[in-house]
Length: 81
Image (cartoon, rainbow, N blue to C red):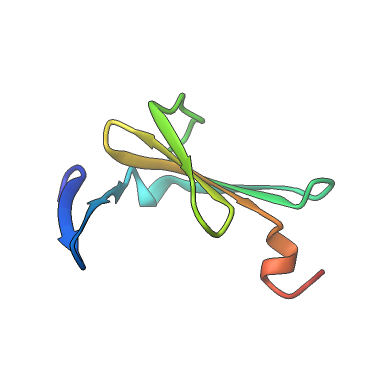
């Protein structure tokens, strides 16, 4: 799959995305604010759109591909807070 695609699940239209470049993944952790940034690619790219999930994770999209994730309350999520 090269881009996103719309599928139907349980009567709802759901958009599926692919990861931009899993081979160039890098992480940055902001300890003061407990935020983990996950980026797919060598540079931080400007997103075309982004959305906040129910789990308080921001998903950044460019050209129908996921280019980054922002995970809030990271240490709490992994049981370290």
